[in-house]
Image (tube, rainbow, N blue to C red; front, side):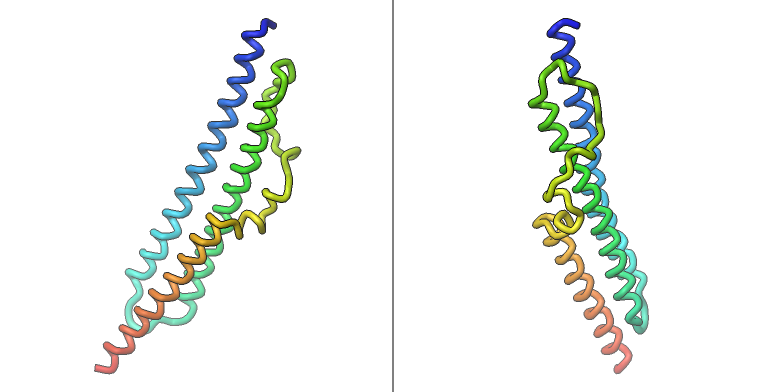
Length: 147
C-alpha cells in the first residue's frame, strides 16, 4: 500500500467515527425534545382532580429519558476517545476497528455521565418545571371546584 492510500484509510476511519458521534449527539438532542413533548402532552390532557400518580408518572418518564440520554452521551464520549486514539495512531496501524471497549475511563461511567453538567441541569430543571406545572394545575382545579 502506498502512503496516500494508508493516509486515506485513516481519514475514512475518522469519518466513520465522526458519523457515529454525530448520530449520538442527534439522538441525545431528539430525546430532550421528546421528553418535553410528552410532558406537555400529558399536562394538556389532565382534567379535573389530578391524582399523585400523574406526578409520579411524569417523573418516571423524565428519569427514563434522562437515562437514555445519558447512554447516548456516554457512547458519544467513548467514540470521541476512539477518534483521538485513531487520530494519533500511525497510518500503518489503521484497522477500521469501531470497538469502544478499550476506551473506558472515569468520564464514561454512567453515573458520572448522568450527573454531568449538561445532563443534570437540564433534567433537574425539567423535574422542577414538571412539579410546578403539576402543582399549578392541581391548584387551579381545586380553586375551580370551590367556586
